[in-house]
Length: 330
Image (cartoon, rainbow, N blue to C red; front, side):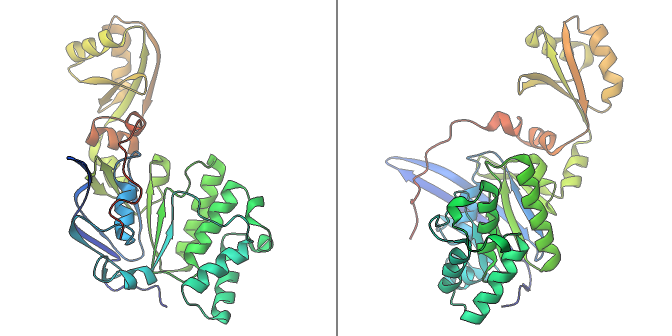
């Protein structure tokens, strides 16, 4: 099957998902629109509970939308779900490998499910194991693999049937930074070898930098969408972070004497200004508050998230509303 997709790889209009629990309802996804061009790496950025996984499950035909439409690889996710499933690969957030089987057996089982002939299956298994650098471990039981090796094998499994669109739901969650970087190296290599479209959800800001375009999702809505560089350029400010002896007084003095708003994020007083280097000396001479440390950073995606949502992504992490794991599945 060719990886080429005519038109957009993913097209979504007014997509919603509401879960009912007794007399109340939880709006997990609130009328989002998005378009992903074929061959792009597209990132869904946001905290846990933002609606990212629910969106990806609707796009992959695991859950039915409450309203709205979505097409993947040119096919409707509700009316043509079998066509969609033949053309997508999916790596779940939770590990789903059979630990008792070998790496090759896990891949062969997946190839059988997709109806690949013996010769095609053997060729594809060889290719994907080489791609994720596990060819020499093909006969080892998966229970012997590290977390990073298991993740790479899951990506290989999602590629066995040569999908047009690969969905990765938090592909590096729980992995150490070195392994996370290695996973993205494999994804870059995959893009160079094929025309595949990659749709990835993440709440790691540094990972979103790898994407061609990103959408920041918060409370079930897309707050903003563009390229990483365009989003950083759009806010055009430096970020000053202070550790002070009296945060409330520091915030009040910043407002009174510098004429800008400040807030507390991740335990530090933060200020967004056009030129941080010019403002720092004034903080020491005009605030009249003990300052224990000060840092100035150029705009980052975390600053973009804070600008459009009012908080950092780590501030957003916390207890999440319960969503029944099988609600709405048919």
